[in-house]
Amino acid sequence: MYVVTVEFVIKQDQVEAFAPLMAANAAASVRDEAGCSQFDVCWDPEGKPVCFLYEIYDDATAFQAHLASAHFKSFDAQVTDMVAEKSVRIWIRKEHNQ
Image (cartoon, rainbow, N blue to C red; front, side):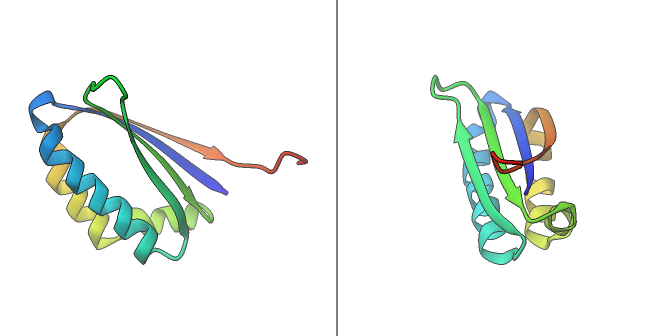
């Protein structure tokens, strides 16, 4: 499995606007992309303006399809000015016996 983690630091005054856009992007990813099996949106438990994503795709091609999707492009354009920092990491998930 192809795993993507993303950490966003949101500008404090933009959290309320960012959150529903992120939720809609996550829902569309799982609903509309055959290669996306999981898209978790997590928030800092202490209320800091930090959002963490855990996404699982079938492979790198499925992730590239996500980046090319209309819903992602729209989301990305809408939130660009809301984000103070963004960090993306790619992981490969292996079964325990591998």
